[in-house]
Structures are given as C-alpha cells and as structure tokens.
Length: 211
Image 1 (cartoon, rainbow, N blue to C red):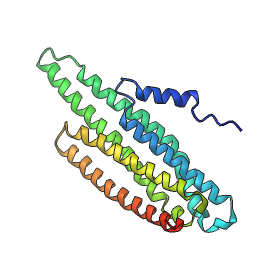
Image 2: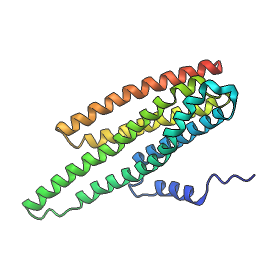
Image 3: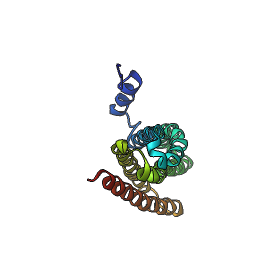
Image 4: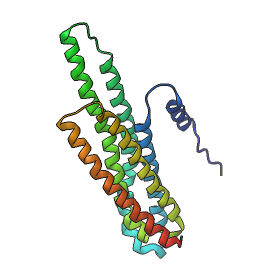
C-alpha cells in the first residue's frame, strides 16, 4: 500500500504559505491545524466504534464524528476566509488619499477591514474550543489504543487557539472602541475555556495511559 501524504495539492498549500505573499498566513494555518485536529478526532471515534470493547465510548464517538466531519470542511473554509479578510485590510490601505473625503473613506475602510481581520481568527479560536469540548467524553471512554492520536487532536486544537488569538490581538492593537472591547472580552473567555478543557483532556489521557 503506497500512501501519498504529500500530494500535489498539499504541497502547493505549503508552498503558498512559504511564499513572500502575506496570505495565507498565521490565521489560515491556525484553521488548517484545527482541520487536522478534527480529522484525528474522527479517526479515534471510528476506531472506537469499530469494537464492542469500547461500547462505553460509542455515543461520544458518534457525537464527535457528527461535529468533526463538518468541522473539517468548516475549518478549511475559515482558512480561506482569514486570508480574504487580511486581503481586505491590504486593499483598504491602498485606497487613494488625495483629498479629505478620500482620506476619511480610507480611514473608515481600514477600521472596518481591521475589525473583520480580528473577527476572522476569533471564529477560529471559538471553533478550537468547540473541538476540545466535544472530545472530553471520548478521552474518557474512547479506544485506548488511539489515545495518543486524541492527545494530538487536543494539542492541535490548543495550538489553533493560540495562533488565532495572536492574530486577533495584533489586529485589535490597531483599533479601539466598543467593538475592540467586545472582541477582547470574548477572546479572553474562549482562552479560559480552551485551557480548562485542554488540561482536563490531557490529564485524563495521561491517567489512562499510565504516564
């Protein structure tokens, strides 16, 4: 059996990230990391459902599959959306500023685009929390032979949150006002939830593995 992990599409994506173009960048990579986290969670769920030995984890596995099969495609869509949101910021900065009206329009466009560029990785951070929360029961009762894969899923979800949060914050540095405060408050709440779920999942997996 020949497995071609690095197919042309995957290789091109990596080359696109590695290019000197600003997009796709960190936000898109956060979303792609999340997609991989979903994929691993689905794999562990299927390995749990494949054996009656893990019947206590079957319901948890079905829940994860229902969420993460859609989560994989949603994550890739968020990767595209994040790149598009940053392109909007770049376009706003390129607007003409030859007179007061143009300067005012450009300033408004930059602000609105920057808010959009903060909201895009915020949605990735939010989705990272959802993945972690969904795998808690699977960590308790899923196939023990695949627990390191579930641990990897949790690591990817947490990494996705961390990367996305940095992209939220760098955009918030450019704006102020109520919108910035609302986004910042939600990001902080998501962060607390992510770290809590991640710590709980990690502790459960380590206990089950005897590590």
